[in-house]
Length: 282
Image (tube, rainbow, N blue to C red; front, side, top):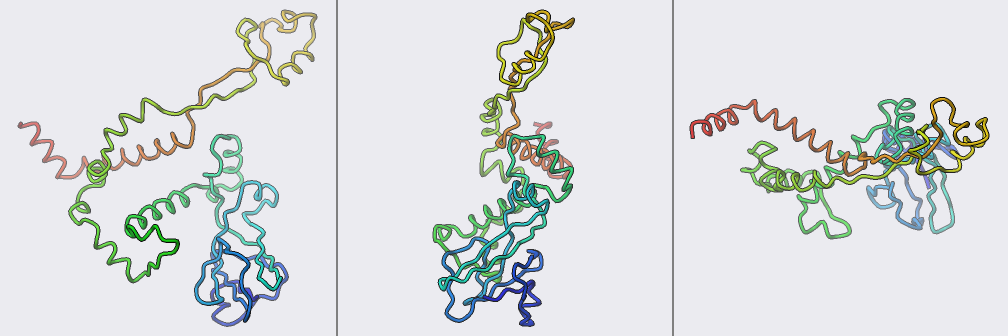
């Protein structure tokens, strides 16, 4: 197996000689198999370009990998049927925020450490493009592999309804998906989760204590609960909060924000003003 750190190195036939090289995904590294070598399995980060030639794509770096290495990298192995194994480190540009759903403190710490390199826009954009090409490919998307050449994309795009394309985005979405009706059904039934936190609570309101609260209780001076509670008559107890900050609700909020911006832009158009004047006359 030969590995090239960039597309330029592959075109110049300049393979890397390091034992465990660090590859930057944005440089478009390549892997070339020698004659007779076959991969033992399909690797999700390899993109086949021609026989025995693969482009090495972007990794999906996990949060625990960042915490171990303090770099947005992933250690990977490639093995062929002859038993030869190739080890390398693949570096990415961003850490995907969508991996974390309910740990706000960890999210804030990662944002402080990585700043703009910890984000969710890339994952959201990829999801949008997947949905777009699912629509463009139609029934062909059920096949395990679909040939979709770049030169053929304009023909696929031309097949989309031109009448719908001329409509403002908010009207097109509402016509196709009945957004207003569905939002009215969804918003009263938002999902939530109960979060438990240890807090100082008045004695009469404490309903639950865990091991942490009990250790705090034992360490306090006094012979009974009233003495340990002190002047404020408060002890450490478990308080439950109804938390609506779930992935589904965050997606709904983000979508509604975009929808609101689109509606505001539409109201500035002459078409919307004419429609408003027409309704006022009627």
